[in-house]
Length: 295
Image (cartoon, rainbow, N blue to C red):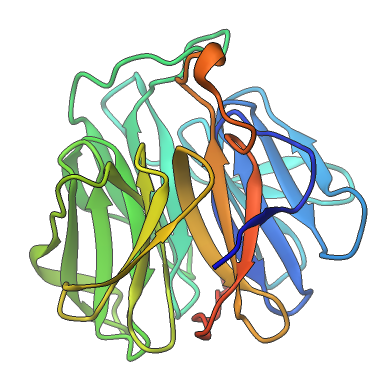
């Protein structure tokens, strides 16, 4: 696979890529840069929105608006007025937490996870010292329920093509878990280790393909690991950036793999040309379609 940057832009902490199948658009955020982006391949520049706090996800809604995860909750974003309206603000007892991983499941629910804030007021990197993160599910009726606690750095929310498994990772613990998942109720159960690969950085965001294989960005290792459904390694794909943060399949045939990367926390003297770039490469597989928030 040959990755190329989609533009000359470089992002402090690119994250949360989502492919809008209906509009054929790519959505992503710069968490530390406090901006969200929507870009249609073939156009010059993305649309962008700036926020007062770190923003960790932007996904389409079925009402034509967007849902963003910023600060400590999820908000409706009106693309015309840029107005933010609260959708859900979980009661998090840890005042230093911020939103991090967030994804929409195949039934249109929005899953939102938090972590101890690691971004200083000037965009500097702070250490994560406590596993205070939590995972919530915002259902399509906007009801909110807590699913997990004691998470260090939340990542890798994806679901299997048959809608029977859910995946979730803790980057701080360097482990990816798999759950049995009830698509009708949205409830995960029977958490166990899916992969705890050592020697290839740390597990960050993931994408799922139609073969049921999980593509996991490896923070600090400059690669993506494709795991088979049984957790064994199928292939290791080099990425020309030290810190790939997440990935998603897009394009008309969903055979283009988009990868967000970061230069957050890297010594400026050691940054490579592609650190912080949004990258794209053609693949030999078809990716799983992303879903809009149906609430």
